[in-house]
Image (cartoon, rainbow, N blue to C red; front, side, top):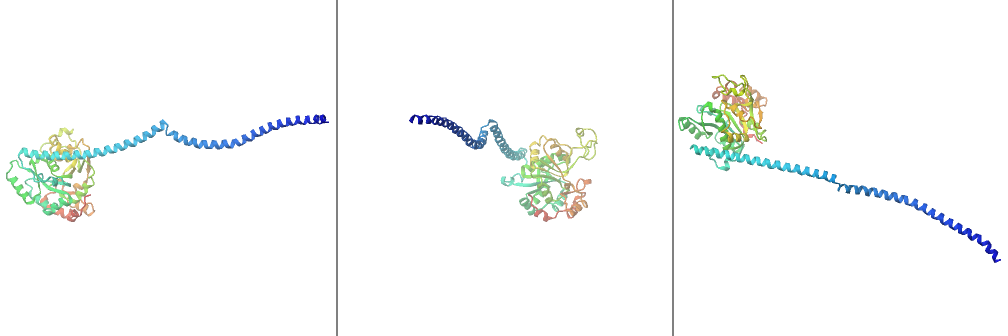
Amino acid sequence: MSMKIRGELAPKSAVSRKWTLLLCVGCFCAGMLITSRWTVPESKGIARTTAVEAEKLKLVSEGCNPKILHQKDVKRDSKDIIGEVFRTHNAIHTLDKTISNLEMELAAARAAQESIVSGAPLSEDIKMDEPTRRRKYLMVIGINTAFSSRKRRDSVRATWMPQGEKRKKLEEEKGIIARFVIGHSATPGGILDRAVEAEDRKHGDFLRLEHVEGYLELSAKTKIYFATAVATWDADFYVKVDDDVHVNIATLGETLVRHRPKRRVYIGCMKSGPVLSQKGVRYHEPEHWKFGESGNKYFRHATGQLYAISKDLATYISINQHVLHKYANEDVSLGSWFIGLDVEHIDDRRLCCGTPPDCEWKAQAGNICVASFDWSCSGICRSVERIKEVHRRCGEGENALWSATFR
């Protein structure tokens, strides 16, 4: 019986082993399948994390990229170069100022030395104490005059040129120097010189030059005036005006202040007249052949009744006065000295208005003239008699000068 039972159980055991094997294989496969499905999301998550980290690694690695590092170095170098250029520009600007000051001191020393060597007395203005002499002024107005022009000088003193305490106030409060400019006679110490010395003691408004007066020597006088003025006063502008011209000082100052930032500026009524080769005529040019064919015109230059130049140009004239060529006409000479230089020419027609009614109409329209004269006379015709009328009708008024702020 037992054998029977064993015979019956044997197949069941065999089947069980087969099913067990199949079940194991199935479970293994099912496990593999399940494991694969679970791994995919995990791998995707890992992939996303890796992408973010890869981006970060890329940014970090870019910092180590030689090309990118070179570009950053170039940008950094560009900034450094710009900064260096800016610092160099400032250093050059400071050096220019220093050189300009040294040149002015050299010009002053030369003027003093030449006076000592020649045995001539120094101008009272040159003998001023250093702190006073080196004070900064807005402008120096040099009024060109002659020994025979005493009445003209008195007419100027009675109209547009302040006198006495007002002149001192003009210098101290407004920074404006005004002087009659004159040299010496051919006979030093003669009656002409003594008359001017007496007049100077009375008014104290002369600038004496180491120069022998003469109409044909105006170019030389102009050079010496600028050289002496720049050695005597440190100003932004140096003005030359004739003693038969009416001037509104406040309007002149306001005009010049607008050009104060410019280093080399030449201001006036610019013209270009014909070169006169015919002898015996007024304004004859002996060196006409230098200007080309007959009938040619001069280069642009300011008319001689009134013009202004900046300190740098006055200093240039002072330093180079011994080699600057003189033409017959002083306004032409001045213009020629600036040819080839980096100079800005300012053509301002308010510096050459006509006498009434011209300047009066302009004043009524609110466009006050700087200077007024008659072109036909190269100054105010019969200025001694007429300048008071011009002053009354075209003058800016005394309050305009004292209320002006030149900034």
